[in-house]
Amino acid sequence: MLPTPDTALDTNDFPADPRAIPLQQRRINQSRLHKEQKFWLERLRQLAEGPPPDKDFPAFLLATPTFRELAQHLAKATARAQLPGLVADEMDWFLQAFCNYLRTSDGEDSFTSSKQPR
Image 1 (cartoon, one colour):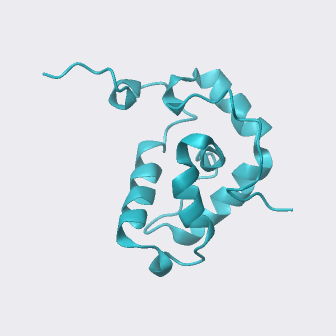
Image 2 (cartoon, rainbow, N blue to C red; image 1 turned 90 degrees about the vertical axis):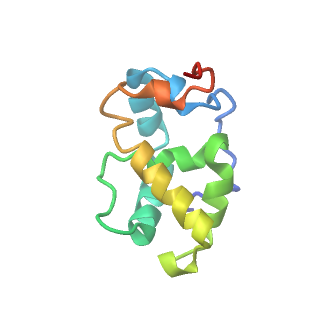
C-alpha cells in the first residue's frame, strides 16, 4: 500500500519546524520513513519543474504534519499542469528550501520564527 496524506504515521513527536532536528536524526527519520520517502520522491519527480530532486531529497517530510496541506494537494496531481499556481509555487519553495536538508545543518536560521528583525 502506498502512503497517502491520510496514512497514519507516528509523527506526533515531529516538530513543527523540521530544521529543529539535528542532522543525524534527520537521516534516521528518512530511514524510518523509507516507504513515504519512496512514494513522495517519485511524486515530486513527476511534478517538479526543471531537474528532478536528487535521490537524497527529504521527500518524506511530506508525510509529516508540517507539510500535510501541501501533501494533500500533491497527492491529487499526476502532472504539474494539474497544480494550482500557488501550490506549484509552494512545491518549488519546498524543493529549494530543503534540497540540502540531509547534507548539512547550515541555514537553519532562515527557518526559525524567532529570528530578530533588523
